Length: 402
Image 1: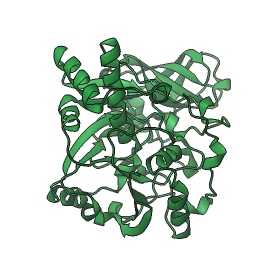
Image 2 (image 1 turned 30 degrees about the horizontal axis):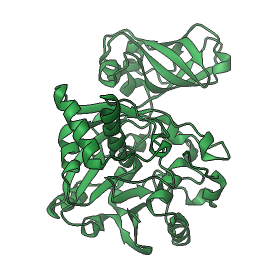
Image 3 (image 1 turned 180 degrees about the vertical axis):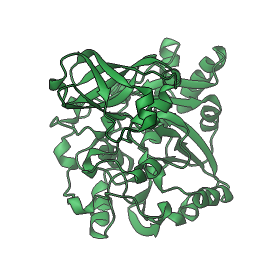
């Protein structure tokens, strides 16, 4: 049954002054709130290795943010901003970033009413020679509600990944109320980012430094990666009064068969770094259920966890998924998820969560409430009254599941 949850019950006052507009000078100097069994204490993030359960499994999201925001100009002088959301043609991230002449993306277009037709030229106010040589142009292919399919074409045979590096800017969150700056190219990216595709950073990972990662390894904690490409839906507020009226965007993810086998045979705590890692890990069970019931995994629907109580154990679901991958000679599961985690969700994988402090009335705040058994206000009241910094560049928390 789809949960009946009023989003107004997940509101709290967040003064603009509490939103971190810039990162701290040192990634691991941020504050860290630990919540365990209703008890809260305060630390510095660099201390996190000593706070983690020994012999646990820590899972990171190694997606990489792409400079997906592009600025074009019409002959009339009107500026058009194009925000690349996800590949259209080719549909695979690795393929589209390798294209050398043209490609199509699903995009959000700013000032779209002033662009009826025709090709747009990229803005190049400083006449940068690298940008001029590329000759990047954009053409509208189709519009579908709030998004459009845009075809990009360019001249010099560079892969599209290089085109974006020269022509695009990092799409920092709109609530920062500023333009992207040079610092964002480095700091709005995790140290371990590997696979291009996200338009928003998995921000829980922004606090990790080489020293912190080394400290975690020294504790005997196993570190593994998943990859979920974060979509622009992460910025979208919940506009409906009830959560049942909110639609989640699809986000593609990849997880290796080796990690699925580790999770299936685990006798230790699983620590997720960020809500994106949680959504990936918890989607494994439902992919396995699909294998049991339909013979193959596919994109996880938003409300699948709530439609009925599945009688399969996690081990049974994982076994079915592993068998499917082996039978099809696949080392990695690659599908998408729309899963929404709200109070009433049954966690089957994640025991501990590292995460930042999220916006009022957001799906991420509902995930936190589900994880801590509804006690989110205790955590957020403490953070607000103890000068914690909020949102993407803000401070962090270490939450043990209720």
